[in-house]
Amino acid sequence: MVNKIGIDAGGSLVKLAYFEQGRLHTKTFSNQHLAEIGNWLSVLSMDTELFVTGGKASMLENVTNQKVHYIDEFQAVTTGTKYLLKDNKLNNDEFILVNIGTGTSIFHVTENAYERVLGSGIGGGTLMGLGYLISKTHDFQNLTSMAARGDARNSDLLVRDIYYPKEPPIYGDLTAANLGKAHLNKEASSDDHLASVMQLIGETILLLANQVATSKQVPTIVFVGGTVTNNPTLKNVFERFQNIMTYTPIFLEKGSHAGAIGALLEK
Image 1 (spheres, rainbow, N blue to C red):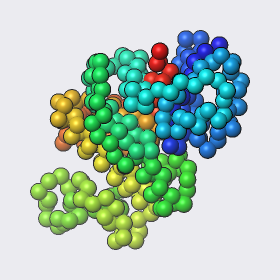
Image 2 (image 1 turned 60 degrees about the vertical axis):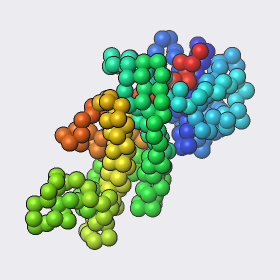
Image 3 (image 1 turned 90 degrees about the vertical axis):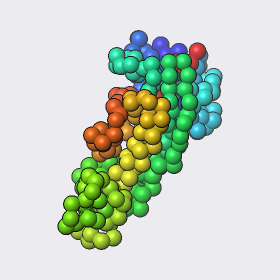
Image 4 (image 1 turned 60 degrees about the horizontal axis):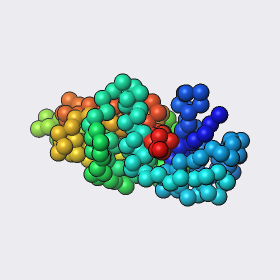
């Protein structure tokens, strides 16, 4: 029997987490499908309590008669991430947390506290918006698949492009301008342009996160949120700069549900 459910109602997705027979389970719905969420919740006992977080948390009141408790969003995602790190036998005493949803929040998390240090409007909403303008698709998985097939070097202006034919004074494959070659290279495809968008998102977020990591002298950066899930292109961006920046990236299997898990764990 499920007595308690954690729910993270975000700008695009509604994530659920619950324990059943001692095992953690997760589910995901589009927040455009409220009736589907309501139908799933209606199967549960009326005594099941909902611990809800996220910017769209209040909309759950319209689809259920079960008791709803509201949980602070930042507290929920940090609590959920600490739980997942411990569950994966990883150190959770101190780390930089990067939560990439519609936008992005960056936290410094210690053993008994957290601080939201930075935020950015660059995130999943950027991918969905620019992705639609480029490809006319609204589907997240289609966008990530297209980006994985593309080559950002056909669309981004690189340092070596600027200095060619001379040797550049810094690493030539660094991005000089995201999408800076898109209007020049007529052979670049929509897949290439989407790979560039992913590069833009990843580089911007990583640079912000690394600034926080450097200022706090904490090398571990944990990436969570729905935008990272099933998105190998973005993960690759987060991993590929370890040779020029000192940081250790961590990705968690259920990181997309960190907020819902944190809400579930609230007393």
